[in-house]
Length: 550
Image (cartoon, rainbow, N blue to C red; front, top):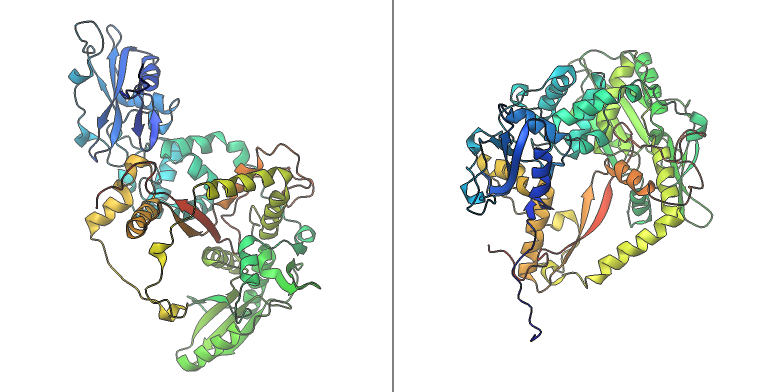
C-alpha cells in the first residue's frame, strides 16, 4: 500500500551451472522419463571445485535395478551439458517431509572422489568402438595425455584443448582417414558425441574432395580486413614484412624433384600466387595469378654462418608485392660438412604462423610423389565470401546494432591506460617487460580447474583479471581492448552470420560457379593470413555493486 517492494528472492528453482541459468526440475523430468525409473529428483550441490553441480537421485521401478552410467548416457542424448547431472545416485526411496514433499536436506551427498576428474561424471567410462578409440588416440597425441585415461564423456576443451589444438586434431584426423572439421570439434566437444557425429556423417565423409578451378581462382580478389589494415597503415618498408623458416633435410634433395614439389605447392595454395598494387585512385588491390609459373627457387652454396646469413638477407629482400614472387625457396649446400638447408621465405600478406605447418606437410607429400589435395576453402574463395557477406543488405543492420550496443555503455576507461613513459617512442625496443611464472599446481588450476564451473577458457579468465585490475586503477566501469586471434575459427562465425540473412545473396559464396549459396567454410588447410582483431568492451562489474575482493 505504501509503494514499497519487498524482494524475497526468486519464485522458481533456477540455479547457475557453469555460467548458465538452468531449472533442475527439467533435468528431473528427463531423468524420471527414462525406462526403469519410478521417481527422480535433481538438486544443485557444491562440487569439489566449489562450483555448483547438478546431482540426480533416482528410484528404480519395483523389482528393478538402475545402472547409473547407463542413465548418464541416456541423458546425454537429450539434455545439454549444463542440464545434465554430474552424478546420479540410486536410492530405494526419495526422502519426504511430513506433508509428503521432497526433503532436499535429507538427500545424501555425492562422493566426488570417485568422479571423473575432467568433468565430474560418474566413474570412468572408457571409449567404445573403433571411432571412439581412434579419436581417443588422436586426442592423446594432441593434448599430451595418456589415451588410457580418457573417458568417452571427456570434453576436448576441458582436457586442455583450444582452437589451435583443435586445428591440429583435425589435421591428424584427416591423415588417419577421419573426415573431421574444426566446426565438428566445437559443436561436439565430448569424445562420444564427436565419434557419433562422425559415424553418422559417413555419406559426407565419402564425398569427393573439392575441385578448385584455377580459372575461378585467378583474377581480382577482395582484400581481407587484416590485409587492408596492413596495406593502409604506416609501414616504412612494406615489401619486407616477412616470415621465414629453415629446414634441415634428412637426405640430399634432388633439385628437379624439389622444383616440381614447390610448383605443386604453389598450384595448390593460391595465396602464394597473390600480387598487390595500387589502382588509379591510389587504393590497394590484390590479384591472384594462374598457376604454371616457374617456382621461386634459388640454388646456392654458403661457406659458414656469415655467408648463410647474407644469403638469407638477400632472399628476404628479393620479394616483390607487385610483380612477384611473394615467397621464395633457397636450396643451400653447406660445403663445410656436406649438409643441406632449405630456406623458405614468404611475405606476411600471404602466410601466417599456422600456414607453415600446412606448407611443410604439403611439401613433404609432394617430394614423396603424392598428389596434393586442394584445401576445402581456398584463400580467394574465403576473401570473396567475406566481401559478399559484408556487402549484403541484411548485414548492415547487424553492424549498426553492434555499434549502438558498444556506444550505449558510455565511454571506456582510459585513465588506467596512460603510459608510464608518455614521451617514449611507440616501438618494441622502448617497451618494458615484467615476467613472472606459475608453478605446476597453479598452472593446472588456471588451465583446467578455474574455468570449469563457468565453461570459461583461459583467455576469458585473463581478460576478466585484466579488466578488474584496470578498473581498480582507474575510475571507470568498462574497459575497451582489442583481442588478436589467429582467425582460423572465423569460418564458423561467417557461416553462422550468413544463415539467418533473409535476402538472397547476390552471388554464390563458393569457389564453384554452380556451388551452394551458403557453403560450409573450412580454413584448417588454407594457406593465407587470417589474423583477426576483435574489439571487446569488458565490464567487470557485470551489474554487481562492487568489485570482488583482491
